[in-house]
Amino acid sequence: MDIKIFLATFSAIFLAELADKTQLVGIGMSAKSGKPVSVWLGSVCAYMLVTLFSVLVGSVLGKYMSPAIIKYCGASLFIIIGLLMLSGKI
Image 1 (cartoon, rainbow, N blue to C red):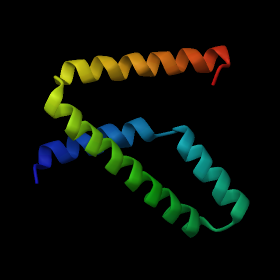
Image 2: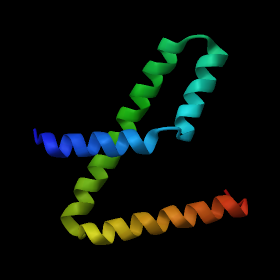
Image 3: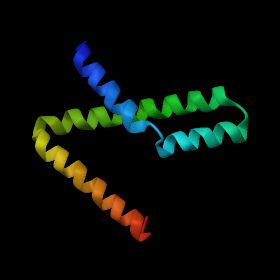
Image 4: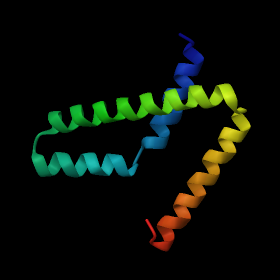
C-alpha cells in the first residue's frame, strides 16, 4: 500500500465530508431513531458501496481518459448540478 496516496485520499475525503449533507442526515436519523449504532453501521455500509463504485468507475475511466479530462468533466458536472439546484429543477 502506498501510504502517501492513502493519507492524501483520507485527508481529501475527510475534509470534503465535514459538515456535508450526509452528516446532517446521520445526525437527524440518529436523533430521530435513538439508535446511533444502527445509523452508524448503515452510514458506513453506504459509504463503502459509494466509495467502491466511485473507485471502480475512476479506475476504468483512468484507462481511457486523461486525468485532466476527468477533472474538467467532474468540475463541469458539479457546476451544472449546482445551477440546477439553485434554479429549483432538482
